[in-house]
Structures are given as C-alpha cells and as structure tokens.
Length: 231
Image (tube, rainbow, N blue to C red; front, side, top):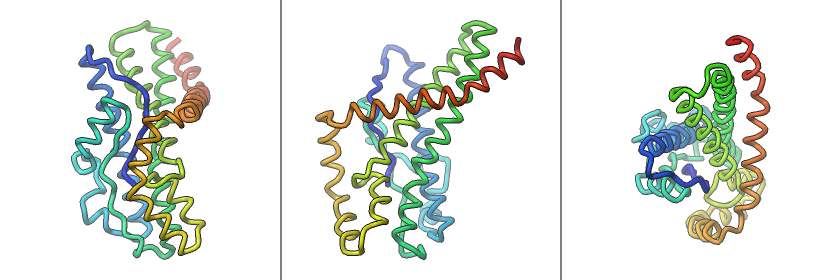
C-alpha cells in the first residue's frame, strides 16, 4: 500500500524555489498518506507499523529515494509501503480495506484544508496585493491541494497494488481474494505500462480538476470571512 501518484505536473528546474516547494509538498503528501495507513492498522490491532517505527512524521522513515525522484521528475512515484499483518485483524479483509482507505482519505482531508488556506491567502492578496510572502504561500498550498487530490484519486483505482484494490478484495470470496492479492507482484509493471500509454489520463484529469474546483468553491466562505476581516 505504498503511496503512489500519477501527476502530470512538470517542474520548472530554472527556479530552485519552485523545486523546493514541490519537494516539500510531495514529502508532506506521502508522509501523511503512509502514516495514516499505519495508524489505521494500529487502531485495528496490528502493531507491525509501530514496531517498525512507521508511526512517525519523519519522512526518512517512509521514503523510497528512487520513488521520490520519480515523483519529482516524471510525476509518478511511491513511498515505502507500511508493513501490515492482517492476522491481527478480527476481520482480515475488512481490516485491510479500512487500512487501505485511510491513506487516500487523509489526502482528501489535507487537500480540503489546503483549499481553505488558499481561499484565505487569496483574500489577503485581494486586500494587500501580491506580496512575495503571500504569493509563495499561495503557490505552496495550491500545489499541496493539487498533489493531495491526485494522490488520493489515483490510489482509489481498484487495481493492485493500489489502495482501491483492497476495497474490492473485501467483497471477494476467499479463493478469489487470494488470487486477487497475488496480482500485486505483477500489478506495478502493468500499472506503469498503462500510465506510459496514457490510457487513463483523461478520466484522472477530469476527476482531479472537478475535485480541485469543488474544494476551492466549498472553502470560499473562508475567502469571504478573511476579506471582511481585513476590509
């Protein structure tokens, strides 16, 4: 259940500031995603993540350096999967599904919080103008919004080894469940081929754009409140 993302946002290597903003946002997305997998498993009775020191906000405990490099440069990357032992769960299939969902759901929560901050910053810019500090903060939180939505949406695709596949697995009979889970060893190669061919780019873009616009609109009350406060 490593955090995976398929995001077609290139990086402007001419700007070191942009590069560091992107890396910082990516680190936060991945760490929150993996931490929430581990926390969900822990509260369901599995101590494996805690024993492996994965219930931490320290990015070094979660990152795969090659996966991070791939995500920064080409928009597709991963973190180290949080170890989960379903034998600790009272309902192994259900426990795996809840643990899997915790990652994408955490990204959607972080995305909405970012949308609220973006609205507040936009109100500040409306009143005070485009200061370097406000614009830098707006760029960071908008990037955080977009990256978290992309990460959450992509991981909900019901295709092994993505988190959505664990939800599908919950409804399968035991024999089919075992066969489905075995697909994980080949799923990454198939997934990379699908992404390379661009077969799912259009629907992913549509969903990401719709959610981004929806969250910004849903947080517009913050814009109005800050505008009133500063005005």
